[in-house]
Image 1 (cartoon, rainbow, N blue to C red):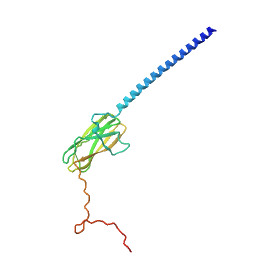
Image 2: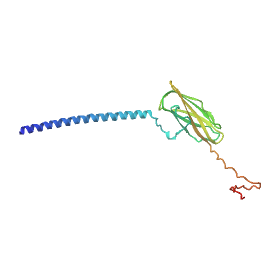
Image 3: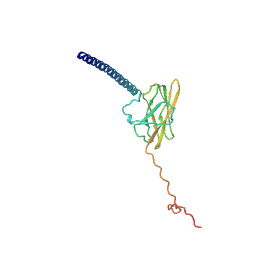
Image 4: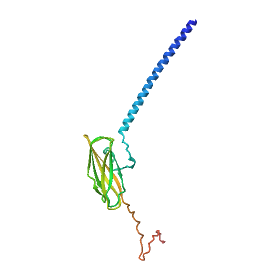
Length: 205
């Protein structure tokens, strides 16, 4: 009888050992899967970072140009910077940075200005073999003889073997210190006294 009990004990011990071994094996496989997933996530994160817009020193000084055209336009963004405050009668330089979000065979850029602002140097620019995530810089030289608020128009055309899309931007420029319009002078009577308007009243009948 004791021999049977002892045999049963050893059988249970062997069974428990086998279960533990199987469990350990499954745990090892799970750890490998976790490690593989972490490696995959790290690779995907790296690829996403490479596709994202590169961050360069001095980015905080760049402003976003105003987008004139909406959806369905070329996949390119525009940032700009004006190193010195534009002064009346003096040429000033506007630095433009184009940020394509898709690759293209070429990126053609044209410039225009509103009345009162002259483009001293603003010839069309072309970039070939455009890559997504890269940066393409151009400069425009402008001048105004009158203080005020002006705009430089920028047209960016991206061309591929499949299609051509255009996106228009507007870059605001403040030249000098614009003079605020004075309020209209009050009306005066023949003696030069200011005429004060009185509330209308209904005459008694």
